[in-house]
Image 1 (spheres, one colour):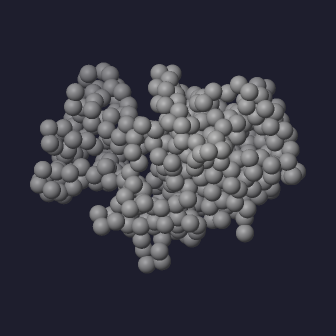
Image 2: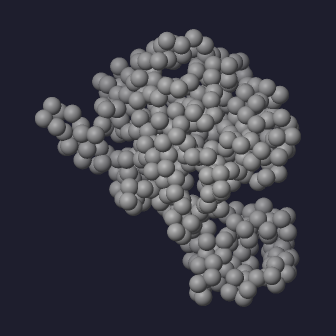
Image 3: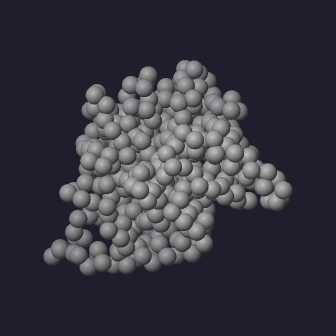
Length: 450
């Protein structure tokens, strides 16, 4: 049985007892350096002593692919500081608002001390605050703990073991829980070497540079690596998450002899709650240990797990009967494997009660038109197709709209009247999307209805 760490303090204590490299990274001249597990533990403890004297209640830690960022995250949490794990691309005003909200929440929690001065419900470590991706609503700030993250890493290890012979390439944003757990914490918990990527300019070629055995990635990144033949021969496993992965992508990886695992999780559950086990059917997901997954009457996936968040900053969690309502749609097959169908709010409800499942239309029309940036939305009670990333030349724009209208007209012939696409809107900019490529439907809706 794999060790389940209770918090970051226990995990960092374990670092001191290990041999081997914890982190691998490149300097500006592309020379590779390594930091051993024992050295990493010493660096975290040294930073911890400094922070205990100086850190505030809440701080924003910019989560970059550097040893300094990794050390800072561990040390801040162990020092009892709540940290906003921030993407370098997050606007400063958004961080300032988040810090203010988190300060208020921290102050309220500090008032809840027992007779010995201990904060009730905590182990003395700070919380990690992550932004949700905000596909169907405004981004929220999720309160997570080192305990929930350590449990999530343990769950992953039970389903897909890694070890000291593995090199895990970390090129996903550490400010998102999929990247935080699967690109960094999981490997560090169980003795693998984490190769810290060289930044956005090297996303596609870092696998050839660092020669990993395991690659956690989002579908768009995997597709680009396949297109440029940028996967190294040592690569054994690709773990795909954060968005649906097309069957042709998984098939191309398997043709190269690479094992493909698809993972399902949420920010609110500290990352993964289900993962592939049958490699011949990677889209069929098995629940992780201690994760109770249920399909409600309307098809929504709900979950109860020890990896659950503490709540949202300034908002109520989506709980009912001690379960989290994910907003995802799914079903179980006769083997008890979870299959996902998409987001509940990816469904447009029409006036007569019929429904349109947006991703199905979008995939069909992208295939028919060859245009990669299409999204379905509602305007004046009707379904409309929005096309982004097109030319700002009015003549070209009109020509493209005409061709889209013709394609949509033919596509509508197979649909009942209430489910047909009413109009086509052509934009000169791209559709609003999350970092993992999902359409921000609430934002698209706002933009076309202004």
